[in-house]
Image (tube, rainbow, N blue to C red; front, side):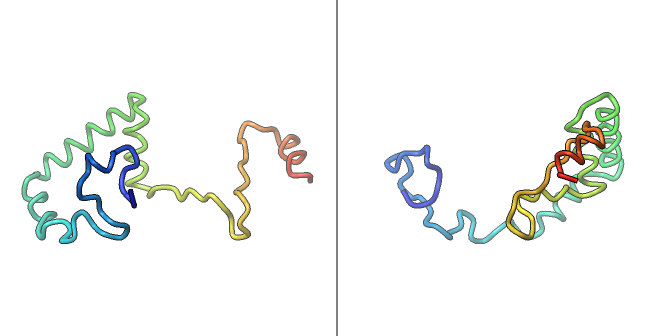
Length: 105
């Protein structure tokens, strides 16, 4: 079956989308953000942020990640550097001598 979920048998999915074909050609309905913004008050927004902060302070890593990604931006995850080689991963638990040895310095 071209494109689509490989776990679905073709006979169970009579109208699979062709490659490059959208399942939602018209996109998100117009006014979606406005409808959302009208549905939640500023006080509710503040309550959600406070709840996330409380969870993060209690050790919830997912909540902490959500806060940091919105505050600092999601980190770029490179799989290759400019030369096409995989990036150098540095173990921050290494001593300086171990790092120099690994780098051949």
